[in-house]
Amino acid sequence: MADQRGQVTLMVIGFALVLLMMTAVVTDASAAYLQRQGLDTLADGAALTAADAGASGAEAYGVGLGDDLVLDADVARAAVADYLSRVGADTRYPGLTVEVSVDPTGQRVIVSVRAPVHLPLHVPGSPAQASIGATSAASVGVD
Image 1 (tube, one colour):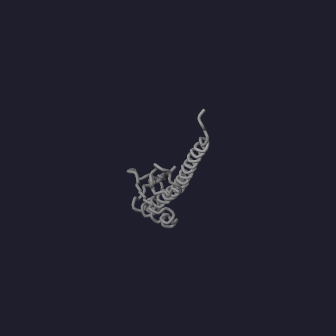
Image 2 (cartoon, one colour):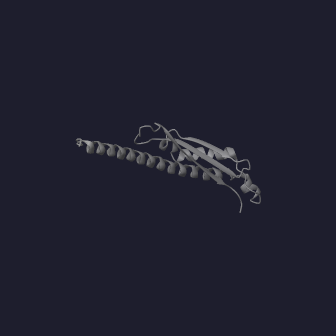
Image 3 (spheres, helix red, strand yellow):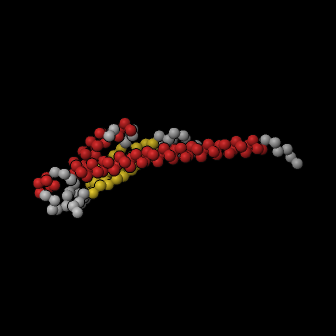
């Protein structure tokens, strides 16, 4: 029978490497998930602020609420920029990009945010730079 000393050591080293890689994957996935949750909250707040600001004005207070409210796209974009500035989004998410659009009917504003995510551990073979995004929409209407 051949000498099998040292085989267990090789197996323990292999299992340790697998365990370390699994730890890195779980840590990176958790960091990405937490950042996505933060971006979801940011996009929700921006969309609600844009819908509120874009639907207030002459049609709400001057004409009345008999007809559907129509969002002003320029006011909605300005409201999103102001909201992001107030909450410090640029300092919390460096490299943040924002897209604001109002659908053709003028009833819904859509806010998309995207930011690079810092992954605490690097798994060999994974991308060095990752990006996470979130999209939220808010509608205005009269019930």
